[in-house]
Image (cartoon, rainbow, N blue to C red; front, side, top):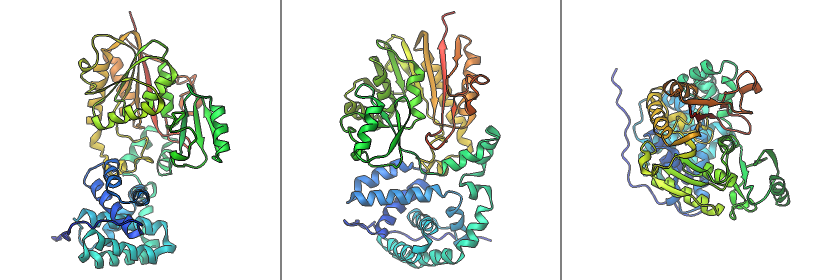
Length: 452
């Protein structure tokens, strides 16, 4: 049977006034979710929203709504399809319904307010004709919520809020840990700080946090875990470069690369510059930071300025080292390769909506090209650290194994302290960090260019 899609043409979106209501937050979130549904990253959609928002509180409220909806992948999107009589093609209205359904599922005791504000949001979006549809869908969901959620969560994709192919990949890769990886990926991420050891010790900074009434504990080396996330403006010494926000797993890169004073260091695919700053905090070195995205490269400069550190920043394709090499080899190279981002989905929940199983070959091709190109600039006896924020083996161990087969002069070095399950003796080269209560998912492989 042929089904005619529902299409409700929009007028121009209303300007949101100061003092935002839930309806106004729904408007901003609906636009962002609609853009994500069209293939855009949530970061880009939120950046544009924050630029246009008339109040900081509106941007914050809309961001929370977006995260709630996107973390519910596999539940509210399936519920919406079951509640609609015909497919809905208008992205903003669909984004509104996904956002409002997720909010209703999270706050069932506030159902009356959520439904009313969702209907008001349809008018603010410029879709007055959709008010009846939004009201009907929301009230139908309210009535059928226990039944619908029970049915959807009986499936693996609904229970774990990930695509089935993603679940299958993790189960095959991590027979004992796949479920914990999925559950951690749906939780709110921890807020971890990196103390700038050039300015003060971790102990001294913990004392500053204590005086500021912020509960925290050390995670080892320069990492500090906050008991509760807070705005960076509340962090003592943040503006002066005493501390940065950086996940504990990401902080492993600097020490693993073993950077020392006087070395030439390349940070490839460096934006937004968290690892760049850490390398410069660890050693007084000559560092070149390269990234293909000019806007993101500007963030490297901003981060280094706050830390009162400096590096040569180049906007360019790291697969073309002639842009920044100048025929002088690097003692150390950090390759933070583009990847699926499967290890950081709790910070970027849109990844669960945007990634497809078929994306793997393209990521693999780019990763292999970067490894080949950057290996050329490594000095004899120098080291290259291959890093991703992925938990998929084909982007990690398999990529490194393929590189080693092509390069007999490359030696893979042990990674102290990174063996999964603590079995360092049996798996000294294991570089996979899985998502946990204090770390996102990362992978590291350290390669040395032998002189033989």
